[in-house]
Image 1 (cartoon, rainbow, N blue to C red):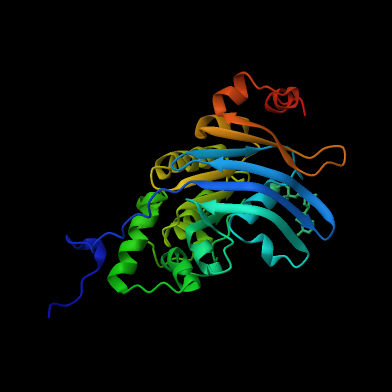
Image 2: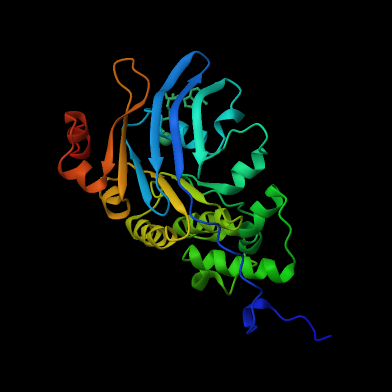
Length: 277
Ligand code: ADP
Ligand code: MG
């Protein structure tokens, strides 16, 4: 038997992992509470396959809560409850017969503050999700996944020579791309990004935006952003969330990004996208 060679200088790579088919995410009548405090009221939104949807709106209107409901993180908060349905290509994410881990595998999440495991190597960071979801992979498969996920996240060229270095040693923007690579390793069908660029400088922000625009060919993306230029640069559709006068968070208006920014129907949408509040 020939000695094993590293994937990285080998001509023949393992069979590619088939990309998960693009999926539509559909939230129907989502209401949410913390204790008896209602924070979302009957939010319905279809997030079409293969496009980027931006969720916009002032702080505290429930955008992060909505994202956490989409991937079943909300139910981990002891005081939290919810009503409504989340469907991924028509399949109920909350079906009691479905394992939580299946929902997690199909819906990845990237947070505002890049959170790679700082002491863990770049290589192991990418693969960390496999362990969490109980996905098995041999050495060749792992090498392959590391390379493809880092490539998709736009980080491969920068780190290929230091895969054993700790993730915490990367710049903020690189750490965020490492987190994107990590979320991709379990081949999610939807990627949720909660203000992924808020902690980053403008250059890193643009790199992540480029990455998202490439990625959306493989995975449906939902992003929360306070950056109106970013919403316009990356997203096909937008939903404007608002919580006001004691009203829980709800969607005031949603539609194509162009319509939302050039001819919104609601005065409050107009004011928000034009920076009036
Ligand atoms: P956004 O992301 O739009 O800023 P959030 O979803 O973070 O809004 O918060 C919506 C509302 O829910 C806020 O009033 C916030 O204080 C409340 N909230 C968020 N998380 C919790 C929690 N773990 N416990 C209690 N209240 C929470
Ligand atoms: Mg938030």
